[in-house]
Length: 350
Image (cartoon, rainbow, N blue to C red; front, side, top):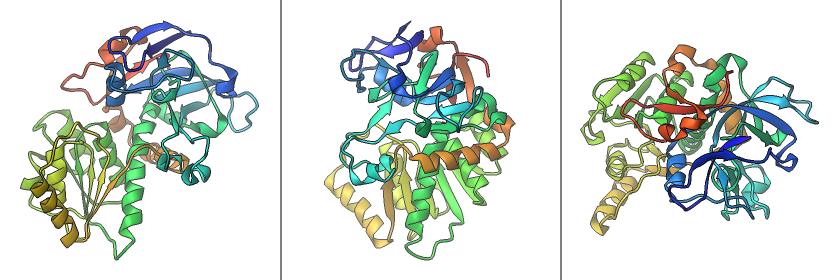
């Protein structure tokens, strides 16, 4: 079968190549790939920045934002042929640590977890893949191709859950929430917040016009361009999706008293002077603010993300997928264009 692979830590080695059919040991459910979303993680792996092949192998099949159709459910009674499914990304460590032992593998303590398409397990950028029933998630069939957005929606779902849990330390009735960054994660965050009942949702991005401001306003949210520091209100919570150091620092100074900032973006960052760091810390301490990082998701959050997508307007969601590339053109999918939101590699029709 054809698969998009890379030799981890070796730039320029990504290619479409023939690979053996997926091994039954990888899962009893056999799936035909429909589409795989492309994100910055895939780009960085192809650039040789990180990534780990399965033990004893030189190549890693890329892709962690999946959508497929069940060909053979194997011994599972929960799935049937033709079901649309996505595959959970992370697997618990083999020790396991206390969190992995209770199903909270997204909070792994010892770093021995593995991840499809990233760390020691082949990903989903292949014509067919296998998955264990406990790591397969059904997609509402009415979503069709839009089901490929489930994995990035889990990132948002976990971030919102973290904010809610921390908020309960005191009286918590958020009225305004700011999302920084209008990429796929930021836009899905705005969507999720509106669906979950937050009336005043703000989104800030650099773009002054185009599809991103339009998509935010179609949700009934408020769009801002420019700097966080220039906003004329103090958010009760911020979901930070850019990973940009200056944006994060501005968020810490702008957040309201007892507010919560959830960091979901991973940027390149830079050195922070001791004086600047002390000022940022003082701003957080004096106002009882909380800054929390969030990455990956567990099965509970995958399920909730699926419920969120099922409630979303299909026409709005469709506008997030701005390009569809064939597997043989995967290098074009890895190239970022100004109008891109979510690019997918499409292996077959829904």
